[in-house]
Length: 295
Ligand SMILES: [Zn+2]
Ligand SMILES: [Zn+2]
Ligand SMILES: [Zn+2]
Image (cartoon, rainbow, N blue to C red; front, side, top):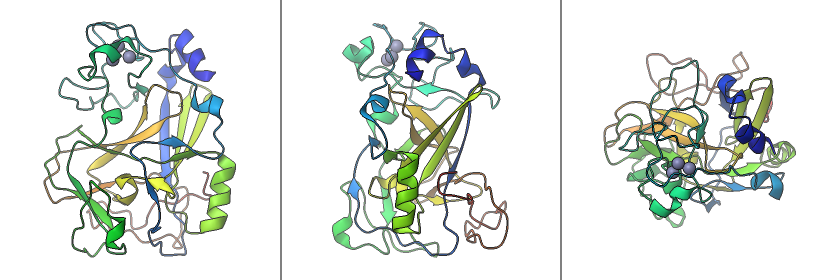
């Protein structure tokens, strides 16, 4: 419903768009990676998300030539291209974060797919990445992943290929779940270390989205926090109002480098937070933490 409003109002409210995110950290327990989870390539609806919410899709564009701002693609709601010709995320001014909507099956450019440049996250992982599964058994290896030897920081993911600034790394593929389900899972699993909360502000309206890869996810769930990360989290909409999170390179990343992003702005102070081991010069000392799992 809200997305149709956005479509019809020409995205006026999108001008005031901003977002913050925070990946919840439970302070007292050392988290072990959940051994059993199902691999999914992209975010799916989970408990607490109704069919109507999930099926709230954008109208799509009528482009038959190319989807660029210059040619007037209506999926580019802020009037600027999301991606360059070589599929890199284009930098936006920090004052106006991009409301990033990719083209979808509702777009006329479906016919010329995959040449539409406004499709990146939906095409999936293009780089060879691997995960350190110190605490995993080999049977949990995913098709696209290999084991790399343990490091002092424990589990993590790294790239085997160079990645250029703005290139797509992977989605934070998750179940998109409702607020009550966040609480429920927190009670059930205690060390909820996964839920990524996206808080988007559209003018006066705030939309909260909870992405939880605990039970269903991809390599995105293995990326560690760093206070000076090489990747960024970007909110991306794959043709529907329910967003997903894309992880993009912030700078050039060399083969063998660990992939990490900043888990977010901490809402809590104090020493009961988990110490951060990112080892960077701008380390804040502790992992970011929210007061509650759904904050
Ligand atoms: Zn398109
Ligand atoms: Zn288009
Ligand atoms: Zn489109």
